[in-house]
Image: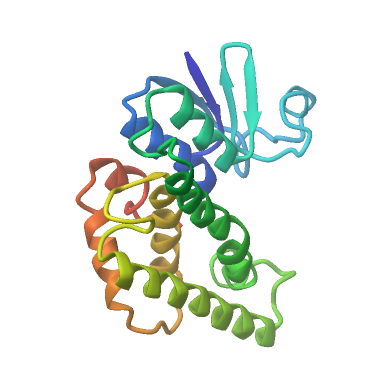
Length: 207
């Protein structure tokens, strides 16, 4: 039985939960993280020395880092339709997964911590403005990509990259600030919202 350690309001945990639903995988989940058991406890640190969620336990196999976890699950549990083995197709999917984890994620951090988390350490309004500008610029890159594919991030078929990007689109829409009108992102959001698992873990009001 697969075990997932992490709270359901974490965007990184929801990646895994969404994928498990797409793959029809059974799992059990334990609440860890903000508002629940601290990942700084010794028993958790033995699983992940970074003290971060999520952690995946699959039998005797332990894995942390959400994007590594979703790649593993797709590889281990018949997810080739989401993560093809053909090198160029896989490379494009990996490109967008890594872009989300590095470029897009870093752009929103300051703004999100100020607007949503109300962090006392993120009260510099100039930095908030810069973060919003950078976030919108990253979303413009996504808008351009979706204008090319007219469907999903990596092409005509739903893939692993859409799980990480789809959750990011939800976060962008739910964080209140002025946004450009990106019609291709809007169409993409509507397309993803036809998926039952996205409505459960992505377009569910959680930021």
